[in-house]
Every structure is written in C-alpha cells, then in structure tokens.
Length: 96
Image (tube, rainbow, N blue to C red; front, side):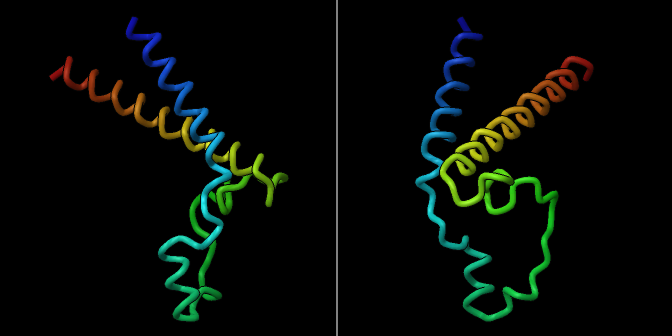
C-alpha cells in the first residue's frame, strides 16, 4: 500500500511539474531583476552546472516542451536527492 501511495504522488508531481511549467513567468527572478534594475546584469557570469539554462532543455528553447521537460527533470533530481538523503539518515540512525 505504501509503495502505491509513493508512486501515485510521484505521478502527480511529474504531471504538475511537466504540465504547469509552461505557465511560469518568463520575467526575471528576484536577483536577476535587481541586477537589471541597477544596471549590473551584464557583469554577471554563468555559474553552476548550466545543464538547464533558464529552465529550458537545450534544443527546445522558447517552447513549452523545453520548460515542461526541465520541470520534470528538476522534480526527478529533487526526488532523488530526498530519497538519497533519507536512505543515508536511515542508515546512520540504525548504526548509531
């Protein structure tokens, strides 16, 4: 029963992330907006991994498909991190 509950929530999460991602605002986020308002945005450097720039899948820029795929990918990454951390904490709790 517990496994079906988890699979159900995963399905809902992926549908929401993939189905509603294209409704997200295309306006800059908070820090990017401040940088534009104060005229220092051009000094910014790309950071991080850059695997999903501007929340779009490369090759699908400026389309709802790219945003939806990026939403699904982000959901799977967060789920994987949460499950990995949960497993690590469970193991540490058993050993300690």
